[in-house]
Amino acid sequence: MTYTLPKLNYAFDALEPYIDAQTMEIHYTKHHQAYIDKLNEALSKHPEITSDVEDLVKDLASVPEDIRIAVLNHGGGYLNHKLFWEIMSANPQKEPTGKLAELIDTTFGDFKAFKTAFAAAAISRFGSGWAWLVVNPDETLEILSTANQDNPISDEKTTLLGLDVWEHAYYLKYQNRRAEYIENWWNVVDWKSVEENFVQ
Ligand code: MN3
Image (cartoon, rainbow, N blue to C red; front, side, top):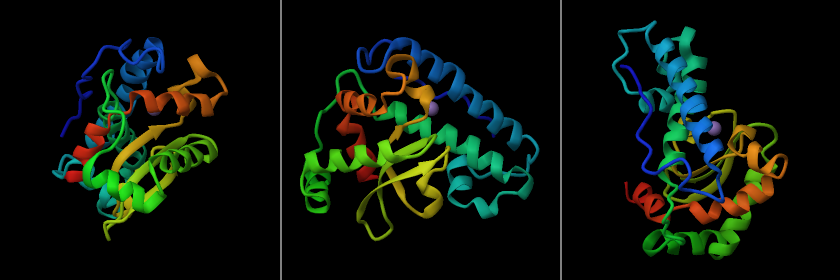
């Protein structure tokens, strides 16, 4: 199976001023493409693999040992960025509604408290990684962060919302100001898309 860049549903400058066009273009055409190229290169060594990359990352133990780390890093990189582009929009639904909104309120207090806790997880991730809102197997919500391109689906969790806190995601515009990047990012998070992930 060969992977290609998933379609971006908006222009590189659509998320300005919160995410600048140059960062979007480099992030999508260079970084995301590089994960895909390295994923394809790894998978080409095992043409017998028919599972899709999501199933491989969910069950890393099933991946041949010689490409396991490559699937973790580059399969994760492929999936993480795919989700990241999908949950952002130039015309976002600014807050969750319905059952997801209720669950966020009962789990974290209210939407504001959720955002504070999520930002704390994103800020405190040391080095490169991601912050996540996930659903656990027992259907509870959880905020967590992962290092590198690790994806919570490897721990039986379902990802609803992910924030890239690698420096390549924000350095051109925000330099060392990760907290400001996170604060501005909320302006482009599309809760309609997050809710679709929740329903699934
Ligand atoms: Mn990235």
